[in-house]
Image (tube, rainbow, N blue to C red; front, side, top):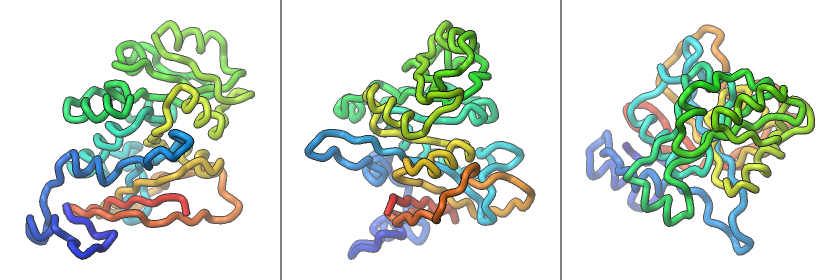
Amino acid sequence: MRRLFPVTDVTDETAAAGGPAGREWSLAELAAAYAYPEPGPEGPTSWLRGNMVSTLDGAAQHEGRSQPLSCPADMRIFGVLRALADVVVVGAETVRREGYRPARARAEFAAAREAAGQGPAPAIAVVSASLNLDFSLPLFTSPLVPTLVLTGAAADPQRRAAAEKAGARVVVAGEGAGVDPGRAVRSLAELGHTRLLTEGGPRLLGRLIAADVLDELCLTVAPMVTAGDAQRIAGGPSVTLPRRMTLSSVLEEDGFLFTRYRRA
């Protein structure tokens, strides 16, 4: 792996050590490269990071799944981003399509998570208005950390009861049937989850962008083209004016670009 940006006097020691292709970064180096902002004088504040993958022609999925667009380096970064987070926020459709399982504890990050006051693994928070979820899945019945379900106050009481019976914690984050993105972020912060990560899907990411609660986007650009009618990384309501993001870093391996943008 090579660091392409930011450019420094030693850019790039990684390439110098491993030749034109660079070398494999350690998990500690990746964790340092993707560290969340340090808390300010008033204590920690919520920081919502998105992690998505896109082909060169803008597809976020192939045949309904993002996995075919990934690569080993992308999966390493995926794992590191999870290991740094308090909670992973994901849409119900993505849970259904991608076969989500509970986040696992990783020995390599145990000491760092303990020092940061985190549990052994991030919680998964599923955003769902209908609660049309299979609560018999391991995501709900056997997570290391109880799964959260974010829904609206008008959600079906029977489905709420089914979620709680399975072991999930239901968090009301909206007055109607749906979830208000800003309230969801605040509700998670009240539970002590300020280092937030969302892995989509596109409809959820679009709603977070439209609500102006996305602080950072980690976008893997895959050196692939797919054509077809696959979704972009974000869908749903548009913003009044395009929001400018600031490039923070770019890593590269095997033609894949691992970009990181923060709100301007």
